[in-house]
Amino acid sequence: MAQDIVADALNMIRNAKKAGRDSVKINRISNLLIEVLKIMKQKEAIKRYKLDTKERSVQIDFGEFLECQAIKPRFTADKTEIEKYRRRFLPSRNIGTLIVSTSKGLMTHEEAFEKGMGGFMIAYFY
Image 1 (cartoon, rainbow, N blue to C red):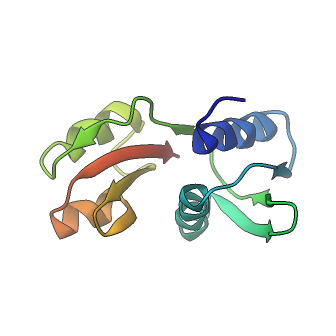
Image 2: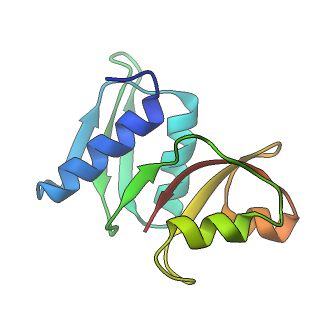
């Protein structure tokens, strides 16, 4: 395990999905990971997630997605560069979501573009 909890968790999710499993338990969590999971749940990439505060773990049930991955290094993009990263990481214009960390919190690339904000590219899924 590396030091990046989000990257490790997304790798575990992707590997479990490719292995044909319906859920995965992640034993290391952070506030950033929880926010990423909230966005993935909004976009129906995961069905649900259940936090266990005693064990500091999360149980995730998968929805519909093909790929999820953290963006390393975490590129900084202003509002005009978001489109460049969307084309770089997502397969098509209307498929997938980039997660952007802005000064107003985590949001999708569509929300960041509408609000005219930039930030750090955290992850993507489609």
